Image (cartoon, rainbow, N blue to C red; front, side, top):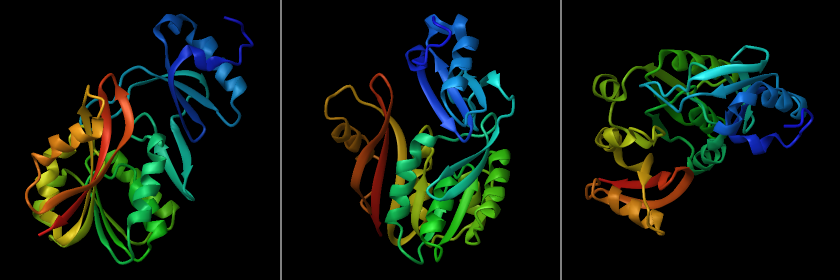
Length: 267
């Protein structure tokens, strides 16, 4: 492997850049050269100060990735910018994906003035904050189970001068039952591993007419992925719900996809 090889991507199976941090997956045959590879990345990508290797996928109830420091400054806290907003993030302690930037913007552009929204799995606040920037007249409720992510979300509200988001830390099901009323016009469910388990809760929180944006990991080995996935979800929906649209957010493994369903609710 040449020391000055700028074609570092051929040694990687994936890379995310969050602020000034690069998180990389190195192909198994090149793991013995991981320090050299990470130093090459530092040399070839401007504004990167830290490189971490992702050693596990998303694990645990807080969906955190296990990271191993490789090169640069060993500091996992960074500022990430997207859609005119800033997000303070500790990549070692919270879940965050820059790959959802288009999806966050898509949802923000669907929201209408004066809506009341519930984000059942808010993380550090990216969906809600970007929506707030586009529609400051909306009322938004965030729920997040990871207390560290919830703290970062509150800091990110301040960082972006957001005044219309109320945050709760805890389990969405419990908070819905104990603290919220059923008067929402739109509900976000960006927890693809488990969101389907909370679908009944989401439907119950829509006032009369509204929308649910459900993210779900589904398997399909057929060529018509969306048709198959729509059929799976339709079996779980009652008569008040209709899939208005669906799309593949990303391919996550052989035969596995993250799908977003835009569900129209009319009670």
